[in-house]
Length: 339
Ligand SMILES: [Fe+2]
Image (cartoon, rainbow, N blue to C red; front, side, top):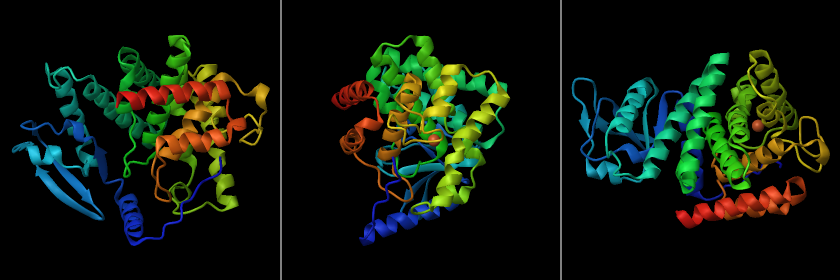
């Protein structure tokens, strides 16, 4: 699928675009957290900010000596919430505390799912920031396992596992979303749990080659030039190279890294393989990757609504496996019904 750029004309949209730019510049300093964990009366030993346009507002001013108490107004606020990246370890401790607290969520499975998502995102953030090792592959295997457990216990939590926030468009977040969609599709297709695990691991690592692409290209506002797009496309071959050097990845997982941008019509990349050469793993990943790309807002485009994204993909149905696409639509339909 070609990159879709929406023309932005109105003032409000221009302001939003500006805030994306500002946010991208500061992105390394801040980390977006999920509001679900701002539970009233809980104490947190770190600061929480809310994002309003380009402005960050300090909402909770906690530290080790004086933890902040979460109030109801903050918990009900509909903003995007950020913490300093340097406070991520404290946030991880806070999440771990919540998972150990009996009835922290009154048996609400969706909140437990959001914890899995938050922990998965942090694993992936580390993974994209540091060289990949065999240990990384094991950590990714554990992460895939947690997502699988969540979805098999309560399939409708897929919705809670997906992040579609406008200020959270990083490669690590995309990878968690693609893994959730890939695992969910594998489940509805009745694939074996082992195959689903291999697919989940591959999906979490499918864009690892983006670590070799210049950030100017990854974060560019607007459409890539053809030479930039050629560089962007090398992330697939780079990902395969990285994972071959590291080792420890199954053939099924590697297929997801290699084939997630291929199309049945042969118009994909990097190899432009045809129908027969595209394996189930690649076909699943291609649908999940495209859907996630279309629905997530990024600096140069709005995120489409689920039905709009599905319509866009269906319009190019020869590029995608029709049977898998039908199962994917069914899965999302169930998700919508549950939400
Ligand atoms: Fe990719």
